[in-house]
Structures are given as structure tokens and as C-alpha cells.
Length: 212
Length: 212
DNA sequence: TAGATTGTTAATCGATTAACAATC
DNA sequence: TAGATTGTTAATCGATTAACAATC
Image (cartoon, rainbow over the protein chains, first blue to last red):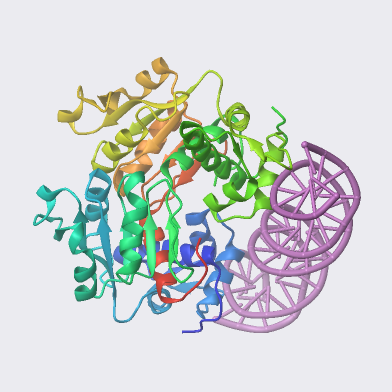
């Protein structure tokens, strides 16, 4: 709860720390040092300590950080206590990969509905998620209390989908389409750009440089 | 060719600029101003000008930048003149989405081979890309001159796949698995982390903040 | 010309790095 | 205790922002 303003990068790293901590707990490990977490992101131990100070969690010089307590603290910081729901738009190969990936991952953040323009996909249940026609976007989102959208449609359809999501009250969008979405400032957009990522890898594969 | 050292972020933005410039050329537009390119990344016009100065390309105060010339300059900067080839490992939903996405996109950077541990996928041709068993990774990469790997396998298999890619001589990896890959410093790794991205969107959907 | 944009430099801002006493 | 790690502050670094003459 010790909020204050936290950088966007810190938020991302907290997510990565938590995933690893949950693994540790499954394996029976109870404590972790900052340099172990630093390896996950390629960062430094000092950076990890700063990140954890941001969530108001303290460690011990001899035992490091309590894994269970830290998972709880990160969860209290990142998660909505009431849970958050996301809507996936576009049930192609990428959409199905996302559904498979997120099913059962985090109880407080799940994909609650999927939408596709192809009529044959409507009505199907994929990885436990029901698929609707895009025309039902607005009523479904309102009914399910969904405030996050995932855009996994081709570039040409992305702008229209984003408009529909915004009008349906979404406040955050995870965008896989290789276009810039134009949304109100109150809506947070996170872009994942495959082509850009591959071109970066290609460039640095030729021009040696330290890893990301 | 005006190289010098260029930040990783600039490389990514150049890729985005180029994609948009190719669209403009298709539409018959011949010139572009820095603020138009800035919209693509959410950056500033000054940032675009800095990026373009890095590739040694100049514009005109009245007409902005020549689109065709700029595409050429970015290509000369980003692309290997001899072309680069990538290998995809993991032909699940995500892998197929990547194959479909990249087919025919950039002639100088293409996915030349795919690999999967599932024997039934070997021998198939998906989106024009032949699929091999993972056991053939090393010989195939050597034969095809592949120096980039794409890891699209489950988390548990990622470390082994990365080792195989590195031993096969790959110098850059685009990693979709939610684990940190341990590779030599000479190998550049770019991570795409779906779960982290969605958790970031969820966080900022609740705590308003400017878009990414 | 007038005006918007360009290339370039100086100032500001934030984040990373280094340093160190405190802790168990 | 000795030693590695922690929380915290100061110094450094880089990137962004602001400013401005030059350009067409």
C-alpha cells in the first residue's frame, strides 16, 4: 500500500519478480537475495532493492527477503483486490496462444471474454473462454465489468477495435497490432511489436552489444 | 553508413518509422515531417530528428524528409545487405502466428526454418516455411546460414532450446518464453513477456498514467 | 516575405551507479 | 565475530527538454 509514484519499468520488473517468487515457493524455497532477482531482468541488486523499497517491503541482511511475504506485498501493490478482467479481440493463432497462456495464471487478472469478427468462432469456448461476435463488445464488457482490452487483430482492423474498446469503457489496452492506437489520454496502451522486436534482434546480432 | 553508437531505443523507433514510411510510399506520399513520425511512437519531433540524424539523413525545413530516401537510409542502417535469416523454434499457436505475420514482410529478414519437438509437425510446410524436428537444429542452421533464433516454446523447454541455438551459432534470440535465458554476452536476447505486459496494462488501467 | 521546420547547442531532468554505515 | 547483504545518500551518467539561429 506504500504507493507513491513508481516508474513504469519498476511495475514490469515487479511482475517478473513475482512470477519467479511463486516458482521458488512451489519448490519450497522461503528466502531470496536481491542479486537472485536481479538476474531475472538483467538488472542490478541495487535496482531490485529500490524496486522492493517502492512497494514498502524490507529484507534482512542475513536472509534476504521472505519470499511469501514479498509475493503478498507485490500482489497488494499490483493487483486489484476485487480482481480485473480482460477482453481479447481477435481469436486467430495469436489470440488462441494468449488464451492458452493466461488460462489459470493469475486469479485476479483473467481473460473473461473473447471476440472475433468471424461468425464461425462465435459461441465457441476456447481454453475456457467464451467467444462472442464483435458486435456484442459493448454489452458484454459492461455486463462482465471488463476494463482491459487485448487487441490481437490484423493492422487494418486495430483502429476500429480500439475505438470500440474505448467506447465500451476500457481503460487499458494491450496492443499487438503494428499500428499506433489513438485513444484518450486516460486509456493506457501497451504495445507489443513483433516486427520491431525481431528487427532489433537482427541489428544487434550483427552489431555486438550487451543483452537487453 | 554514418554509424557511431546508437541507442537500443533508437533502433526500435527506426523500425517503426520505416514501416510507416513504406505505407506512405504505397499511398503516393513522398515527404514526411518529424512530428508525423513522432506520433507513431508517442515521442517528440525532436526525438525523431535526433534518430534520423543518427542514420545520417537530413530533411528540408519546408518539405520535411524525403520518404523514399529515408526508407533507403534506414534500410542501409538496419538491414544486412546480404540478408539475415531467422529460425523459429516452437510451432504452436504463437509460432504459427509469427510465421503468418512475417511471411513476405521484409525480404532481407525472413524466417527460413521452423522447428518443433512434436514429430507430427516435422516435414510440414506452414506459411511457406518448412518445419523440422528439433534434433536437426544444428545442421539446418549451419546449412541455411541462420544467425537469429526465435524461442516460442513453453517455459520449461526454453533453456534447452536457447542452449541449442547458441551452440548452433546463433547471435541473437527473440524470446517469448517467460524465463531469463542464460547465454554468452555475445548473444543478444530480446524478451517479449506477455504476462508482464498484461500486468502493466492492468496496473495503469487502475492508476491513471500517460500512455506508453 | 512570413512561417513552420530543421540541425544543433545548452539546460534540465531522471535514472543508474558508487559509496557506506547499519544489520543480522 | 567476520562477512555478505541491506537501506540510504551522494555522484555520475545519459536522455529528454528547451532554446535558437539557419533554412527553404
